Image (tube, rainbow, N blue to C red):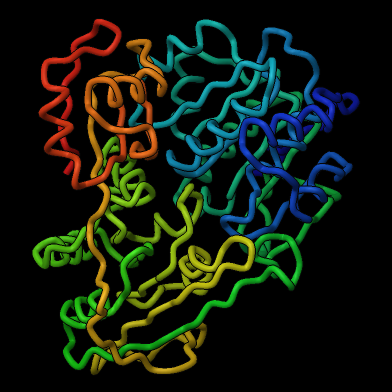
Length: 459
């Protein structure tokens, strides 16, 4: 729609000093030094920045630095808005920005989250809002939030927002931000065109799509691409043989093209006794979050997913990518494969399963050699379990409280307690699978901070 464009007004405003931001990144995120892409973004000038870099390269940290350098002092109004295409990406961004943005109030808004809790968090006006398009519009329509004062707008993975059908929502949100003087666009792939309402004008383009971590050729990983032939049209048995050939200790993502297929493949792997998880857009938000947490903490080192899992998620290093279905687009091929061989030159493997009689393989799908699976001598097994606790942040419970509870009441050592995902009204805790029965027996009837808590194994 013509005329609906970002309007740049006033002079660029500068907030946190770069040295202060980097200190926060080092102490709060554990990142000792910035990669080349992050350094380039930190020093970028101009009012329109386009950052092109693969998933997993550190774009969130990069645009967080640029955002915070451009904010003025907290003034009781929304100063920056970050829009992300998926709930999980919004949560990931919120986790990073809230840790680095010292002195600023940050809120994260997304569908599937309690609207009541979100409305309560907006009673004090935030400085920085991170949100998915639909939920942000919902708050605007309810007059619970005003983003017209925002001077910095970040549209993260904005091409994905358009792919997911948020074009109208994005247009309305951009129109609502009337005082923008900096806009930052990010994408994991090169773009052919921009929506007319963005009108980015003269762009400072930072293109790091060729370097996996923005650190140059020496740090690029080796990704081996292998083709496995299924002699049956149904690929389930071939997938089973492939999974049985993989060694224990790594993570594997199995990509399919449809939700129904994801359910079918997941059920097959579960029947085989394999520690598999499921992730797709038809799941409830809590189930999606649980699946990602249990994949990351090692409880389910196999994740069956649609292309929703190919980008915009905070997922640990994945050793194996399996294309159960051939990717429908070149972009899907790129983003799926970008989940392996991601950090610091780490290597990975990509498996393509083709079925006898399958239609021609797209030209963008390539492999180096055929793969003939043999049963692994050290097959994938479950070594980690996840405890579910029905108390969380809203009950004033901290990670430290949970560690103390499991050590003092559950008989675990601190070293045996893995990652803790603390949510509004619950928590997930990784512990050794061999200790689950003993731990549950010990904590039965015990309290955390004088609050009764129910503890169970998350299936």
